[in-house]
Every structure is written in structure tokens, then in C-alpha cells.
Image (cartoon, rainbow, N blue to C red):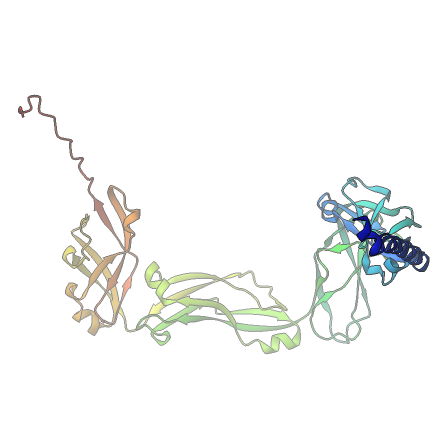
Length: 419
């Protein structure tokens, strides 16, 4: 063995390798020295900010903090190190009351072999509690209307606005100030106004942390012109009954309105709404009371706020048809309480004379799962086999559900036969 080691210079080769390694480490240490770099303005991440907000708190100073640090390490590790390789964060979980805080921050480097030192010691923030406040609105009117026009009053809504913000900021607010210039106006005004929050000296409040629940105000001012306008209704036809088969008597038939000239001159009627023939028939009514709703921009001095509408069906009459329960739909295993139903129909003389119980089919409208033992009153639908007639009113039938008898269990034989 010794002879083999001697012949192959193993000791010399091993010693040479060790020397080479030592030289390599020496050179690497000399050629890759430590270096240092300063990073300014590193953005700080706010962690657990949602917990702060859920506690009703807000940061009013120090919202976007930055810090400066120095990073030190081997030159090869420092190469390519940028701001986005560094994470700076501050934990807000310990902040639960208003006040000023100097918070410690953490620094995370993507390369764990690097070290850092702080230049900025802490992150200062100021925290206040969020609150709401009702602030009265004050309107200032400037200028004059055009000659020959006068205002008949104005409205500003809301009269007070709700604002949300830090308590110390809300305490400075005296009122909301709005301004409108009337110069040369010759028509009614319906617009939105911006406003500013001011202190008792009229100085505008910093809105950085303020939230307005009503960002604008509704301002209306009327310049009057009068006119007498007819009242109308719309008829919604049903089945064979069309609008020309109905007369509508409206009282009052007209109403006096006033408003800005451009608006009043463009209004030729005031529509009270729609009247559905189907609903009239189902409710079996011929008289309705409808509210008089004025168009935007007009008013009235009339005390009439409702109109009475009387409906007359032209060329139509009513008849009563007695329908036996043989014309009722089969509902086995249930039964009907009624033997017959008296139904009132409307139509022309020709159609009503031809109408008979044999033309009619009555079907109850129900869900079997909703039925209970005993009597169940349910609505019906009626088919008239194509006849041009309309059913007046709403009708029901009574479905009778019999109680299912209990089947007794068999009594055991006291003397069973012997096997």
C-alpha cells in the first residue's frame, strides 16, 4: 500500500488540492468584499388595517409612510438588490384607541444572508375615531330674476346633510354652504347644487377624510304661469272589452295649475294613471278615486287632491248563470261542498242570450299539499268555451277533504291452532 501511495504521489496530490482550496477561498474573500447600500423612501405596508377600520378608527396622519434603511452584505449578494426585493410592514393590530403612535416596523429581505440597519427608527401615525354629524345647510341666493318674473318660493333638500369623518375634523364644521346665482332667470329652476363644509368663520374644511352621504342638494324654484288643464285616464282593455266600449266621467274634469311658462305651455293634460278593465271586473266596481299627481315644476291652488272616476260600459249588460257542480272539474279523491255556483257575466245581448251553463267549466285553483282535513276554500278559474263574455267578481269553492280512517291492527287469536 505504501509503495502504491509513494509511486502515485498521493500525498503530494492531496496537499496540492488543500492548498488550491485555501487559495480559492482567500481569493474569493478578497474579490467579494462586503458592501453597503442605503434605500430611501421605502413604502410601508399597513397590516391589519381592516381591523382598525372595523373598530371605527382611521389614520389621519401618516397614511402613506416611508422609511430609510441600510442593507449590508457580500457584493455578489448585493448585486441587483432593488426596492421591490425589500418588504417593510407595520402591524396595526395593537392600535385600538385614538391617539398618536410611533410604531415599530419589520423589514424582510429576499436574500437572508443580507443584514440591515434602520435609519428611520419608527413609523409615526395619528389615529382618530370615525363619527357622523348632521350639518345644517345655508343657501345664499345671488342676482335677480329677469324683468317680469317673480319667484314663488323655493325648496332645498335636504335641509341638513350627514357627514362622516374623524371626530376632531367634524368638531370644526359649522354648516354646509351652498350658493345659487339667479341673474336673468326666466324659467323654473330644478337643479343640483354642490356645497362646501365651512367652520364658524366661513373657512373651508379639509375634505381629505370626510365622506358626504348626500354629495349634492336638490334646489327648486318656481316662476309662475297659470292654466286650466283637463284630467284624463288610460283604459287597459281586457278580453273582448276595448277602450271604446267604456265611458269615463272624471270629476273634477279640469284643474288649475301654475308653473314656469315653458312647462305650463307644454302640458295639455294631467293623466291620473291607468285603469285596468280586468281589475274592474274582478272587483266588480265602476267607481274609483285616483290621486291628482302634478307634473314636476307646477303647483295648484285647488283643494282637490283626488278625482272621482265613474266607469260606464257601453252596449254591455249583465246576467246571472247558475252552474251545477257537474260542470266542476274532477278533484277525486276530494269532493265539493257546493252543489252549484251563481256567476255573473257581462257581455252583449247576443252573447249573453247564447250563454248557458253547458258552456262553462269551473276549475279550482289549489295545491293538494296545502289542503287540510275538513273544508278548504280556494279560488276558481272559469272557462267560457270561447264566448265573448267577462266574469264579474271573484269566486271560490269549498273542497272537502275526508279524514282517512285508521285501519285497526288484527287482534291476535287467544287460541291459536296447534301445529
